[in-house]
Length: 280
Image (cartoon, rainbow, N blue to C red; front, top):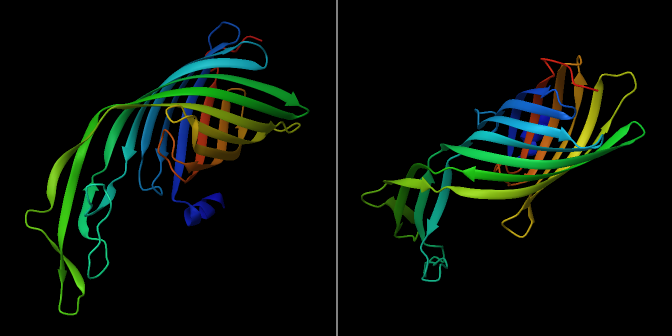
């Protein structure tokens, strides 16, 4: 049902899949995570992101945990169209005196491309039990490096032509389309992300439902909230080792991952302590 609603109203719809391993390292409270995920955005037309992550977590107390992780991300950027109009020296659009229409020059078409990103995160998370409910708050610092890349840009430029009835048509100028390399410079983005989550422990049931809300504060733009994320779903504890998650996600805005106004279904599978049990 969520998928049907998403495809009808969302700017984009996706399917996210994730496989992970969590293992206690033999020291009380210390564990490591490994994970690999693939995201199919752009209305499921193809994979738009692949990533691999590794991290360490440590429980300071029963209710407070800290951690750090590194992620390698290979992300897909969709093609872009940029309309071009004639402008004056101040950058204002100029209009035709007779028709009153903006003087259309043409457009630039930038081809799609894949880009490498490196991400480092550090977090602190606290939780509290309220009856059978569990309320948690996570503060996470996220530092992402976008590597230099390049693609191809096609430039189309037109001349405005009027017929005897003053109807306007556009003719492609000689020498166009013009092709040029479009370099994507390396850049850095830093975010502080807050996530509030509420889960409910159903008595004698291996399924735990949860809801969450998360915001991304842009540290390069005065803590501006670039993106809000909402999620609802559940985790199924099949056995002590095997955990399956199913969630519906809605992203509003465009943050570090540039997934603006996105609805997605997330399916995750995690293997916990496959090599030896955690110390109690």
